[in-house]
Length: 187
Image (cartoon, rainbow, N blue to C red; front, side, top):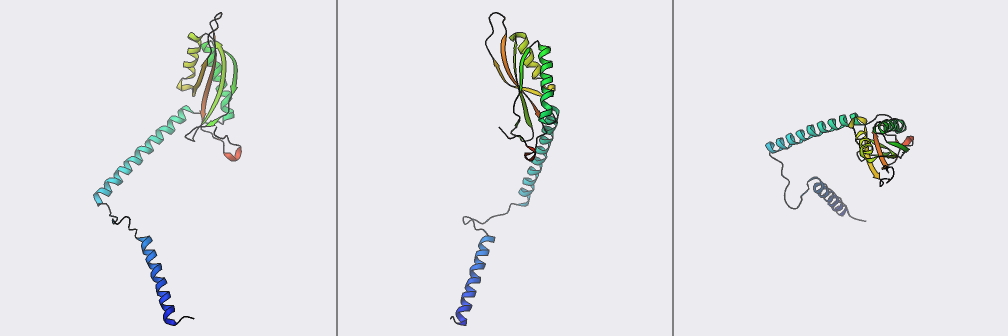
């Protein structure tokens, strides 16, 4: 058993240790240099810069969202594919390109996470100049809401002077399925 004096010493020592620990956490000492507050004018200037940066970023975000709205579909990927195929067929007819096959590919979430790329692969045969070139230009038209992502052209046939071409074309949609509804993974 301890005496009353020993108990008081242990309790007061414990309280002192707790107070020192609290003081240490509340007032960080750093590397010996005391933290100093900014002068009011410097703090106002930093705040003004931060507010201007926030406004600029908000304006850029609004402009980017408007651009996405102009160049992307709002339909689900399974509704975008038929629209994309129809546009590709129309452009091929305009350009004089004979389509052998159109194959939908797996949609992918883009890096921004706000849009989904819905690609199709097209295999066709036509004269390179002017047909295939015209097709590629028409497919890249910004009003068409699609982009050519890959082109592979095989050497021309010496008899018919036509080339076999494989073109990947993608359209974007902002309707991204949720993971709970069988969403589309990145990939």
